Image (cartoon, rainbow, N blue to C red; front, side):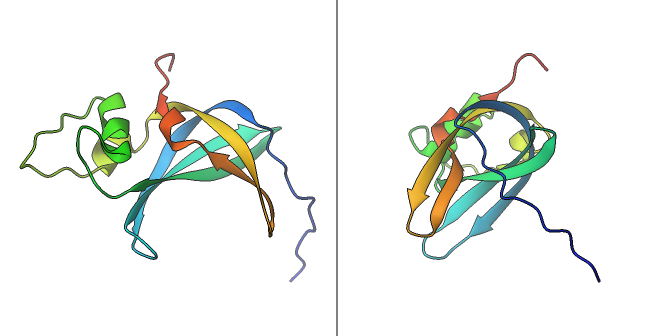
Length: 118
């Protein structure tokens, strides 16, 4: 099988528009809820993920995200974060972060909000 060799795509810092395509969960090293956003950068489809601690309250980062997407948070009840988020158009901010392994584009979790123009 032949596999094409491509250049690394460096996503510029700045604001973007996308669609939330997945909500997933991980528990190592901590419990996190990952929100995957698909968008187009220079004609390339890209998916980036914003991570939120898996705790829902009026003041938690995940709770604030859900409130921005019009979810009603009632203490004592439960919520499936995928229901108010999946398929929603959103705006978000990307910032590149330098690590010992290289430079990586990161979604600022607190920047994800509904795109009211779609």
